[in-house]
Length: 300
Length: 66
Image (cartoon, rainbow over all chains, first blue to last red; front, side, top):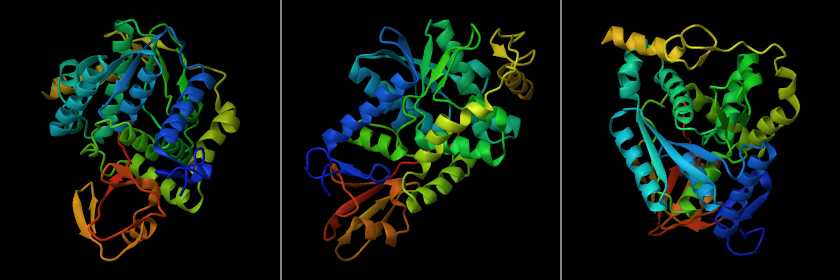
């Protein structure tokens, strides 16, 4: 198989684009896709300081690498979830990446913020671990960004993540979730920081390939709590569809964003308040994070 | 040839020469879900492997709360 651009031996075939690339031309292709995402959704400007949420995995470190290579001013944010050796290893990967690139890495420990690590939160809530984990991540990303003066947080969500989320929302016709699904979530309150997903045009196989070709040392093993997660089941379903019909995931997500999403946008925006305890944004009186912290405290 | 799989980590011995896509089919692995790595390079589906090759099928799927 030959590279579509230069004719050298290809290292990766992209069936959905009916193309194959050599290492150098794939890296170019990848970076151009990120640039297109940033441009199309006006994710951030050249002079903005971007907080990149990093987990030690391929997606977030690939994103940070692209932004650094393109000359953006960035800092990394690592949230230590306290998930046994997995968190120890993923933290080490982020520290090593930041040190090698001379970049700032902010570390926040969930245990210090909420009173317990994710494995304990899972037991306290008796809900799937991804539930408390996702809630804590979204809350802390926003709060850290606000406290430190960042106007935008970039996450490593890729095309597969977004297509799986969309699939889940459609399966249950969660119309509110459909209205919120976007590669760029604008700040709709002075205490809500803009959130953007510059990898939404790239599949997770492509981000893995970019990380490999750029010799990024990322954590390959899955989070021990991801086994059995609904998002994984949705991804597996979509991958079988992709195998039968290359481009299925791309068409599903980008078709929704271009043609279907406007139909779900809410005219009557949900009123936002400030949490009576922490001051962060919530739709109620006390935010979900503070309620979770309270439950952890009571159980402790 | 030796094929290394992950999550959980295990090794499978595959005999004879064949194309990468045939190895994946035999092991019931969807091409979209892995990178196929030999040494310091990635392989495309049409490439031949066999003999003393050591091939890693590196999963690309991540999940849970994202």
